[in-house]
Length: 210
Image 1 (cartoon, rainbow, N blue to C red):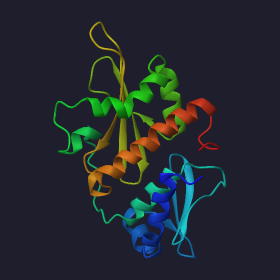
Image 2: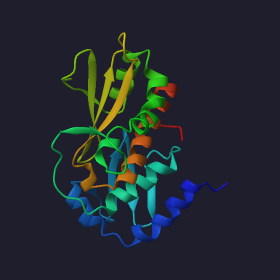
Image 3: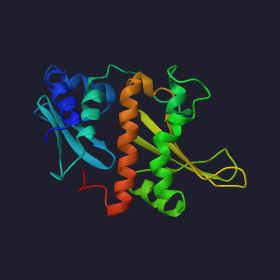
Image 4: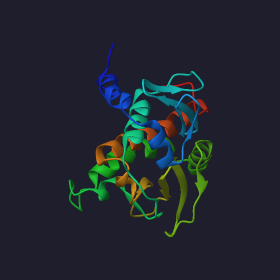
């Protein structure tokens, strides 16, 4: 059965067919082969991006949203480099008010459910997906940095529970991320990251699941 996400991917294919992949590869520092196809690593899996579609190199199942995000990425005209200043996604748009914390908790709630009682499991999973320990500036917290895509680093913060607040896990994007992907695409990207963390923890591997 075709899902709405499959429809989104199929709708992107005509745009991909017209994309100058060599130009995109040069701008993002990606490798490109003799056939003019890009190879890109996304959440510790390699993908071939051609003018006809996105193919996981390992041939294993992959969530369709991962493929769509990679098309949006190579279609982007973004330039520049990250500044390693991070904000939660809902703080990077004027759609939500400054007090609308519900959206952030909706994005990160699955991580809290899976890892809230086991920070070691979270750290192990983040490292499997290519993350590295960061220096947290907050008390009673830990953080990790991941380059989810070239020029789009993400910070994952784990804040311990105390007598006033429960455990919090938050994903934050470099403030330059909107130069490369629109807000809606970043939300999809965040969803792909959250899903990858949870599935990697469940299966013990970074691949083989959708």
